[in-house]
Image (cartoon, rainbow, N blue to C red; front, side, top):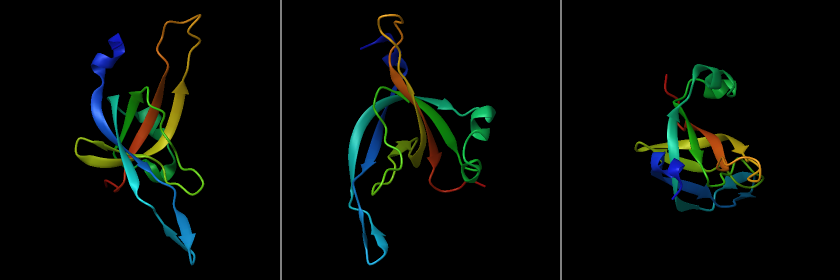
Length: 120
């Protein structure tokens, strides 16, 4: 365990399996639950302004983890995560990868999770 991992909480990530169109209707083919650990942080006002306009009225968290997170891909919806009992959709991932020969900082990902239902 690295020193940074003591700040991480156990969470459940739901990886969306590939789907397909059937007669013009999208059919999702299940999901896979994956246990991860992440540091959960409030999203700052500046970060909220950088999100897509349709996401700015939703509850959003910034999370840090060593787990690779999937965004929207062809034929697959983005990963989802449960935070404090509510389900969130991953809307942005930023890889923070460092050169271990130069820096001793741990490689990780910063991602933003937005509530699936709008909070108004």
